Image (cartoon, rainbow, N blue to C red; front, side, top):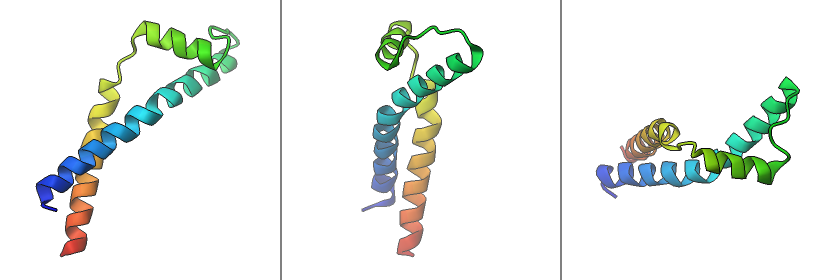
Amino acid sequence: MTPLLRLAAGAGAGIVGMSATYPLDMVRGRLTVQSMEGVHRYRGIMHATAVIVKEASSLTPTLIPSISFTCLAFGLVSTAQRC
């Protein structure tokens, strides 16, 4: 694979990985914070997911650094291992 293709593969891996795990992490975090504050906004995992989707929380601000990091890490490490 060329270095550019490795960078693209790293970016793709970052997008897939973050898209799969970030929503679950967000729900977990919000449920945890609500229990610490004593105010229960969410009734459970499914309710929290529905409320977060309705609020249209954006994944883009989280994806940008993740894509950059994974792209560079995957591309540079795999290129350095070939040297």
